[in-house]
Length: 288
Image (cartoon, rainbow, N blue to C red; front, side, top):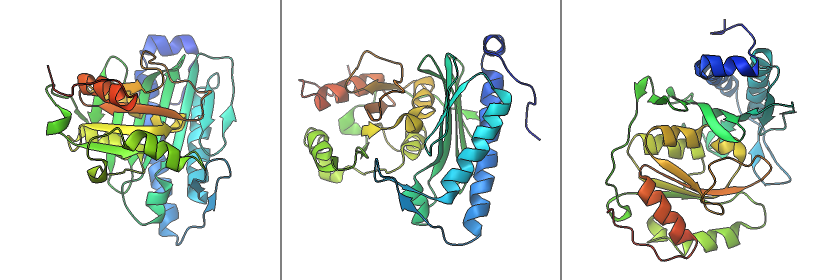
């Protein structure tokens, strides 16, 4: 059984203050996680490359997305739904659900355990609800605009005062097929000591490491909207910040853009100065 079995209209979401939507998103990612684990236990996976990005996709990704989409369509029939593996349900609505059915498919294929399932709800492009589940780790992140971020039921809040020299940075670069070298060069040569910076091929896992205090900032040279719908809100509601490198004053996610360079950090001051660094502007990375 699902947590809630009623359908929501847009005006009802305001009345419920998005809490009901968050509860449904949480149930979705956990049930999708169970599905993924069952499929993985059945044996080896086949995979193929996506022609537009070069990323890999498996039947597990597709099955997870189909399940999540079916639940969201039942509860929110008036909402637009976009899934990484091809789901496009467009409605005349200010609300859009974005689904990454398996973030870190390559990680999953290598037998590693830090891939995640992510669902985000955007209101006119602004993240308002998110849920992320790591089925192999049994770790749940849930977040709601104006309310907070929880890690396995415990609310998370960042402390200020972090500087880059005292902290840790992680990195990922664009999945734009054919442009990896240029993007990597453009970003990496502006970062301090780039050879020592870990590369995470899973944006949800980078968010988890931020929330756990294992890293202080994460730079992505070209994420997709599916990667960041829940992630950015989780960091923002914990007291951190995110900034789009090519449009630092914009907080909305442009779902029309295929790739979005961004920085997210436990410290808003650090996020701003990393963006300045990446744009080639003078920046002092000492906390005021």
